[in-house]
Amino acid sequence: MNRRQFLGRSAVLASAVTYAGAVPAQSRAAGKAPGLIDVELEARDSWQSLAGRSAYLSTFNDRCPGPIIEARAGDTIRIQFRNALSEETNLHYHGLHISPAGVADNSFLMIPPTESVTYELNIPDNHPSGMFWYHPHMHGTVARQVSRGLAGIILVRGDFDDLPEVRATPEKLMVFQDFDLGADGQLIEPSLMQRTQGREGPLVTINGLSNPTSSSLVCGGWTRLRLLNASVSRFYRLQLESHAFTVVGTDGGLMSSPIETNEILLVPGQRCDVFVWGAQPSGSFRLLNLPYNRFGAMGGGMGAFRKPPAIEPSVLATFAYGDSVPQSWTMPQRLASVEALSAPERSRSFSFNMSTGMGMSGGGLTINGRSFDPNRVDTQVPLDSIEDWNLVNTSTMDHPFHIHTNPFQVIGAGAAVERAWRDVVLVPAGRTVKIRLRFSDYVGKAMYHCHILDHEDLGMMGIIEVV
Ligand code: C2O
Ligand code: CU
Ligand code: CU
Image 1 (cartoon, protein in one colour):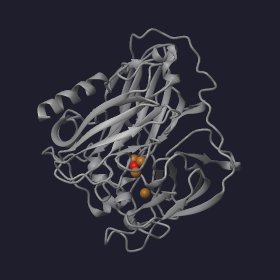
Image 2: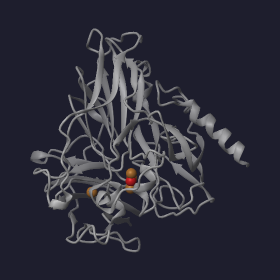
Image 3: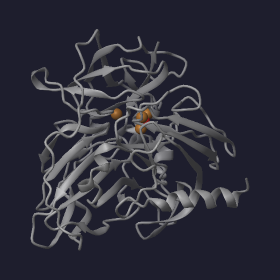
Image 4: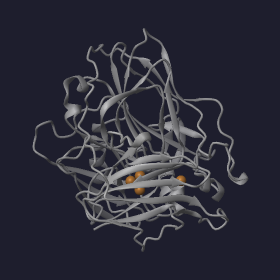
């Protein structure tokens, strides 16, 4: 296939679904037999318009964020991937419960420049619907490649999406990214100190736009917002002026029942599925990013790593009411059956730390005192077992924990288990978070790590093998 065909066919896929508004049915229609979804992706550097400026980014099919891939449980997604970057890369399918082996969600693969590979992702029949994503996972350069723009959404559609009232609700997909863009349009590489803290770019974008305006809110009706934090390190503490959020889904799909809140903390890698009820008569409303300090309760820790927290909220987007027809439905109180995992067969502890002398060698970010080694299995678990993991943060900055292949449930105060599937959970500085996991369906090796991707690159990652 020549290059023109390659890009031409990809462009068709990309234009079927847009980030801007409601998502048309590019995917297989409800009730039809499972299908094969063919996707062509090419990672390449190119000039893009970013927040109204010219920027030299890394893209999938010349898009930042990359094209949206839509599927349903039971489908196979076949991705013909070509690496047109000038360095090795690969793809990880964050949050999908698919095989970590072979040419599927295998983050050990390394694809040299100019080479191609065909990924085959078999989505099980009982896979939850939800929003997942793809991004490179080359250890050592994950943060840089993702910070250059390489990220895209994978939507798995299901019964909830097929409800007539949900189909009639405007849906907006929002990918949060941040960039450190120089005057010449080139991205600025962070210092080792910035990487140790986790790089944050001052230019914050949603779907490549700075403070976009949208008139997608429905006056007297629902609007569905599906949020992805694709930033390397930046946290978003979101609030929408004069509106509450009705959260229906977490990373791994629908929760058992909706939760109403005025604020959402979205840490790197996380997704959130929320509905907003247009309760005001008219007006325009800012989506705010409230201050959050991810460097410990005292705002510091060791002097060199102290970073003054932001004091003022910043504006991420502006929403106004559009002309969509009002809807009268109420959100069901039961959204999905999220099963309760039975008692664990064993417990383990993982301690997230930064050793002294860090920042000098570029190492020093560890799990249980060890830095990532691709040739070492850190944790071995039997297939189908259930475990409780204590995630202990003994450092002075927050670490969002993430694991591949199998999602988990968070155990809260009083041992109550959250009826929701997550694959990223924030472990705040100096605190311990407990989760319950089940290792289902797939044997093989995969990773768990801090999703501040600079921390992952600097060693805060381990290998789990399901046997
Ligand atoms: Cu989104 Cu191993 O990462
Ligand atoms: Cu992942
Ligand atoms: Cu971290």
